[in-house]
Each structure stands twice: as structure tokens, then as C-alpha cells.
Amino acid sequence: MLSFQDITVHYGELVALGSLTLELKRGELMTLLGPSGCGKSTTLRVAGGFLLPSKGSVFLDGQEITNLPPELRPTATVFQSHALFPHMTAGQNVSYGLKVRGAPRRKCRREAEEVLERVGLSGYADKRVQELSGGQQQRVALARALILNPSVLLMDEPLSSLDARLRVRMRMEIRELQRSAGITVLYVTHDQE
Image (cartoon, rainbow, N blue to C red; front, top):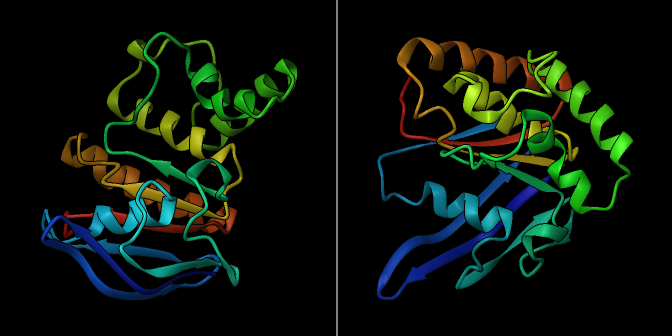
């Protein structure tokens, strides 16, 4: 499904990734675990097209996507900071990707409400982002990624800003959502739990 073949990334003289070869199967949730600076987020950025490797190739379903820009890849990323638009409602944040792709307003609204329900936020479409708790904001970020029906969901330390109890609950919810949707997930964390 998602394959890294001999990926090397340099930041000047620093080798951030050295000859990484990795295969992620369809429907699999793979976690990259390690301390800060070991190349986890760099791997995710290469997968999402946000960073070109110095050497090597990335394949998705047998097609090389190494030089494909992020907006043309069938991937979606959930960032550590949530990266939500503070001036928008939860529904507007979730439907943003569809809107950019030119989907009609009615379809954007309907699909945003459906995916918000999937992540346990039924009835939250009109809530402003600032009115939401950290866990609810994380669910909105997850819904915004899921609405695009990505082949691969990339998650970069998505729970690090949450308290310990909420992290445990959100980990279980993400795993359940991943299993029920059958989506392929590459999850980056330094949290050994």
C-alpha cells in the first residue's frame, strides 16, 4: 500500500533519515515511536509530500508518488497543533477541504455533519472552535482529515497537547475509528503508552 524505498533525507550535513525502507499494508495502523529528533515527523512529511527526500522513492498502491505535491496525494494529515481555523465553526473547519475542491455548499454541510457524527461530535457543526475542549478540537481535526476519504491518514503527535486521561480515551477512539473505517494510518508519537 504505502512503501518507502531507501528514503534518505538531509538537513544540510545532518542525516535525518538514512536509507529508510518501510512497507505499510492496506488497513494497517503503524506507529513510529521514538524520541524527538529521530526522524518520525520527517518520515510523515515525506509520506505527505511536504518534504522531498534527498534520495529514494515513495510508492502508494504501486504508483510512485515521490514528487507528487501534497494536494494531489490521496493522504490527509492530522497535525500536533490541530491546525484549525479559529474564525470558523467546527463544520466549516471539517468541510474546508471539500470546499477547496469545489464541492457544493449543501454537500459540504451534509458530509461535515456525517463525519462529525462518526467522531462523536453530532450536533457540533455550528460550534465555534474556541468553544470546544482540547479533545473536541482534536476530533474536529480528525474529522477534517477523514472527510477527504484519504487512502492513508498521517497523524503527527496528534494527542500530545491533551491531558493523560483524555489521551488514553482518544487513542482507543482513533483505533476504533481506524478499524471500523478500514483506513490505513501512519501514526507518529514519542508516547510509549
